Length: 518
Image 1: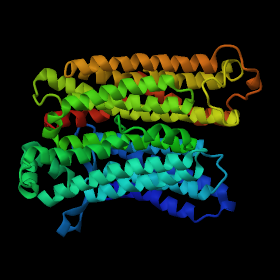
Image 2: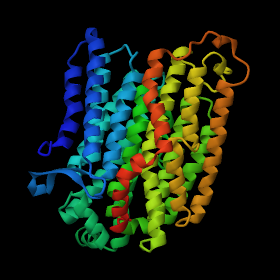
Image 3: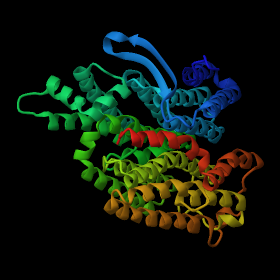
Image 4: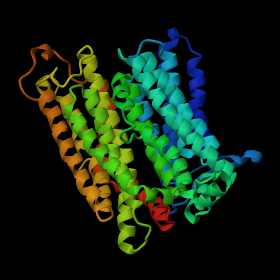
């Protein structure tokens, strides 16, 4: 496979699958489901091949493809990935078939639904492999369109407003991001991420922006801050970072279960990926200028979202705010490693620990949060649409397997040692504490609040007297146990042996730190 453009094939596979599936009729709904699932498994198999062929000793870009596209505009078809990109590809390849299985019982417009899921997967793969902004932005936007229609056509009673809010927020962020990079292109003539990162590190980007776009009394600092702010907004909306988060709870609550899994499991990671791959390497100086406000926003994101989760009574909204809280830890790690530019042994160790933690947290949160939303979807199916915190009680008496497996996922989200949610958060706090002590200390309040609302779910839903309305609620079927088993098993495997992932990504982390990317 040395001469095969694996990344191109990986991106085109779900795109081709979507075109095949969307051409089927509603009468061929069963075929549409199985074909879409087969294409998603094919993408997973190809991703595992990339994982096995990946040189874990090299922290640089691998599987690169580079071809001239529009030379006069500095546009290349350039693909490549390092440990970060590989991890995000694997996460996307795992979450998509999970989301399809969770959507198996959808009856309306089945071929269109599963085709849109495959279109979204193609957008994710393209986003995590493209290294030229023009090419990358096409896939960034490609993921937005199917997500909008998945919410709008198959969502809950408030799906219209939820889809509109989702579209408006993300589109505003995308427009701001596009304008920022158009300004960069007008100043440098470049769209390539690695070349722009070099310019950002040696300071020539700021000089170019000032020389080409400087106007009257505006000097280089406010000008570059404006451009940086546009790029920051594009990624902050996607994560999301407070106060750009208000679209997320309603979108997660109204979207069908499979779509919510895609939103939290993969699409939210696009924002964190943008911080790591694009924003920090290209704007390291600007990050330092506004680092303190960004750290305060991160602390607020972590603590306030955990508090909001505790105040909710809708299980989907609880998990939605919990997702904001957990991704806030990723931002804490990112901004912590941006605090100091020195490379003494102590700070290099702390940065490496925090960055490894961020990578793991992205993957582990995607797996765990997707699984939790899947469990809530199963609960909705059994209760004719109910998912309130106070609608249940004592379910462990009638559905012990369901409660036991969902309890494992909840404890993973809590960060219980031995499960996958622990190690990422531990490494983030281990690395961030010596770098930004005050922000890390304040962020521990989020851990406490997370424990409170997760234990509340366990108490209100699983324990206490059995609600007579659910005395005949069925436990998980054999099929449901089988399809949930891989996700639950992976939580244990990564909790006990995180080196399975750390061994692959650490060389990328070391190279990022060594090159003073941050």
